[in-house]
Length: 393
Image 1 (tube, rainbow, N blue to C red):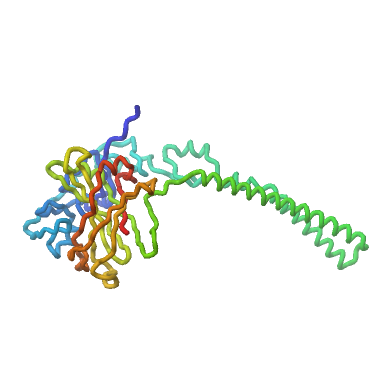
Image 2: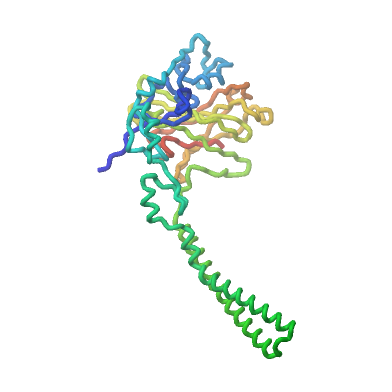
């Protein structure tokens, strides 16, 4: 029986070195919660722990420090209450990592982070693009692929290329005959019978040319009908992306990275953990969406997820209506079946939620209802390596 790949925890690193900066690394063990920013989800070289226990990187802290209030639980803090932690590169490099290329784990490497750079110079797990069919192929399979690959356009042309070529040759011959006929008419080199005979021959060739082109057109039409039939028989997965349902409705996609890591960080000592999306702009409003994990029992049965929206100061704040009054719904989108989408209405009415955000600050957030983590995981909602997709309307 084939074994599943070992679990990994992926983090985007920042502040350590040029090679590691903004690089996504897969570790064989989860990082302590005090090392991961609760807002951007990155693993920075320095973090700041608030009195309430939430952890930010210094860049994200700068965005909320003007109010000296935690954006998640709205607890006030002072500078002297902050605990600053430093993650040394030498310590990080001792941790074990795996190489992941194009969404696949490379079987050739499982070692310390300090060894990863040298491995990546020789790694053959990344995809390359076939110059024949233009499709991505695993590097270690590319030679076998080239031996069997057929240029996708070559056979299509040959279906009707021969009749068309014959028609073109006929046109060239007719051109020469028309030139000869023109010289005869102008110079009166032959009598009228010769002109009539030549004209009859040209008419026959036109008829033959018309038949050849008609044949080519029929074969081309048959080919396109067959291609359309093949394409229609393959029902592609709709994916997590959804169009707006009605005029005046706005929709965007938010992705939460490392949701498995967030789930695994929950313990009886730490029963809550938050993952926050990248900033988005929709209908002129700048915001982030937060995924809130809560442990209230044992195992997956006791884990649930809710979502929060945090309005942030943005470039369009002076041109949109305040207080914020849009109806908001978060959708956990199923990657294959739209009918399985989970819709969670988000009520926004408190003044500290709907007011115009202060410069470089986030408003407080309001949570949706909760959804069982087990239902999300078993239902196949988690896509693209540890990200769950949600939307705001």
